[in-house]
Image (cartoon, rainbow, N blue to C red; front, top):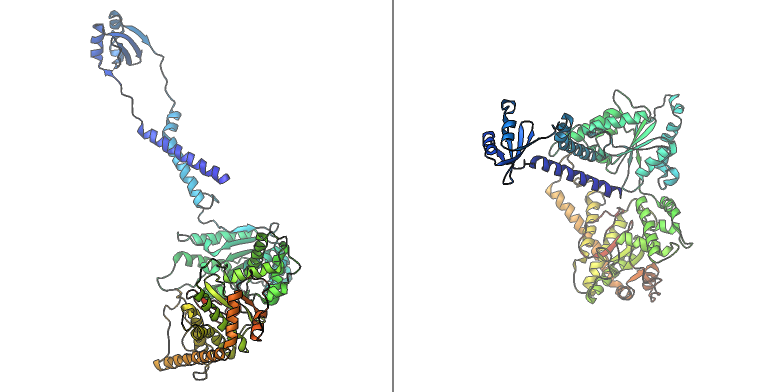
Amino acid sequence: MNNVVKNLAIWIVIGMVLMTVFNQFNERPAPTNTMEYSQFMEEAKSGRITKAVIDGRVVKALTVDGRQVTVYTPGVQDIWMVSDLMKAGVRISASKPDEGPSLLTNIFVSWFPMILLIGVWVFFMRQMQGGGKGGAFSFGKSRARLLDESSNTVTFADVAGCDEAKEEVQELVDFLRDPSKFQKLGGRIPKGVLMVGPPGTGKTLLAKAIAGEAKVPFFSISGSDFVEMFVGVGAARVRDMFEQAKKHAPCIIFIDEIDAVGRQRGAGLGGGNDEREQTLNQLLVEMDGFEGASGIIVIAATNRPDVLDPALLRPGRFDRQVVVSLPDVRGREQILKVHMRKVPIAPDVDVSILARGTPGFSGADLANLVNEAALFAARSNKRLVDMDDFERAKDKIMMGAERRSLIMSEEERRNTAYHEAGHAVVAKLLDKTDPVHKVTIIPRGRALGVTMQLPEGDRYSQDKERLLQMIAVLFGGRICEEIFMHQMTTGASNDFQRATDIARKMVTQWGMSDVLGPMVYGEEEGEIFLGRSVTTHRNLSEATMQKVDAEIRRIIDEQYALARRLIEENRDKVEALAQALLEYETLDAEQIDDIMAGRPPRPPKDQGNGGASRRGGSAAGRASEPKPGAAPDSPEPVV
């Protein structure tokens, strides 16, 4: 409501300015009927003037035909004008002298439009500079938001899943609470702490908890808030921010996404950015220059430490790096408990099962999981959020919403069923693959079907045999299309892309080839970074590249042959699994075990809860169109 009133007032002022300016420049004197003095006297003597009003040297006369004329007289030079008029029978009267507007009034009326225009211009300049903070030209003022100790209620109890990171920063809290404990032994607290980790792992929350535990002021700013179109503005904001921090010392300055301003300096493609580099230079000087900032701890967060300037990472600036990694199963359980505090949870919800079923989830992902589960419960008019809501929320987050309205032909459904059955059967027959948790042919997101393999525990590396079996599982879908449907579709494109990517990395990066040995062939390809080399140098001969291609081809052919042999030897299990998918659309682990044991699958527990989530495990599916692949040890597998 306040914004509406504010905007309405602005437009009223603008309208008044325009109207005033228009009237000022559009004023035209009213047309007047003037008469020369000599003619006026002749007309009066001829009896054609009936009345005259003398106003100083101006005479306003009325003729016999009703016209009003104005005559400018010579004044005191004609001393007989009044007597001549009286002799001619003209009625004469005189008006009171008009003093006219004062000088100040004339000045105000003349300059009012200009003053109003200047006021509107100043108002808009203040709005563009952040609501008038520090004046109309406060370009160099810091935009850091101050959160004092009374309003910051976040503590380490609100941060879970990163125990090692909390232990690293506990020393900062102890120093801020009792600096003399360290200073009397000659110890110096780190001036800066760089928090590194994937997005959503809680870097910002951890920095806020440090300030909450230490009960000190907390300045929060983003790296992009320093950079402006004017060169030197960012450096001025850095100086102003540290000046404010010195007044509130001891305190914490938190710079989020510091890679926006702290990228490597130097020549690259297109040269450097003068504004960003000057801002970085000023930040380096403020952190460790001639004037030390005592009692100020700078905490920065980024998920791209590789692009930061080396001068930022040296001792004396960011003295230590705290890695905030993805939580393990115990950390995920703790994070889920923190986010479940505000949600009414049903007794059947087992947090440990949810934690084991969400490998690779970050803290933000787990918060989203709890929120989605609460939304599902609200749509069903439940009073408590139960385990079924969490399962449905997990499926939606990983796979997207169910597309039950998608119209598929019967042939398309059968092809998808055999495709997913091929993945599931090969995964069940191999010993080092992750257990098959769920298979679905319900379209979700961009996928037409998915086979989910959920690992039994967190895994941080992969062995050669497991990687080879992953490739075999990926080929199971296409092989079933060829054997049972006698056709090839584009649904296996993503499977081939992932299988080729795994085989290539085994040969060129992980040293898992007996022919080529433990050697890295070629540099890892990545996006071009302007502070580094633009091109990728490959110190490989043509003969070596041919050997690399031949070895990749050998691995793919061997695993393709293995998957084909397993499917041909177990045609009955593939047929049974495909028919069950066509009937139930979604099969869980128990139903799949029944089919693999030769028994009819037990009835589904909940046919409405179809779909599968694949995050953190290996997943293969039939995609509706090609999608980018992911490394086998990546927490983001794709269909």
